[in-house]
Image (tube, rainbow, N blue to C red; front, side, top):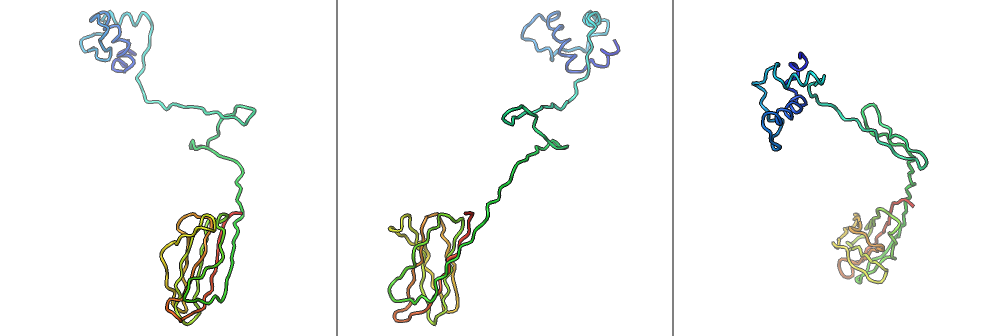
Length: 206
């Protein structure tokens, strides 16, 4: 009975003994065996004697870590998933890095006028990022704006319109994805033309 004495308060022992206590003392199916009060039950109680006759052992409940083996398939066999010493998933395979391409187009010595002019249309579909850089190397200011189009027929301004002073430049980058884009430009003040260079620079995996 020493084992019972040591494990009298264990959860598994209380549940087992409580089931018998429920039937013999309460005769109720609604009685929770874990609510049984064993404070007045001695080791010479018939309940203990019955346990001893059945040679049943109980042990203190302890928290245990559940271990699960996970399997996968390679298409032909079922094989275990590999982990490292800390249980982290090991992943193997081929990493394919696509080469990054760079595209640059330079349009030089464009002369502004009082009317709005436009560059040719650039297809941005193959690029992840693209920008237009407008450099004013003339003697007067220029007014420049980016235009976007889904089909090279319908165009919409991508605000804001920017004024570029002589000897400076501005960068225009589309703020949303539209396949086509171009740059429009004009003289800021009537009869005061200037010269500009436009750089188209784009990058992508193609």
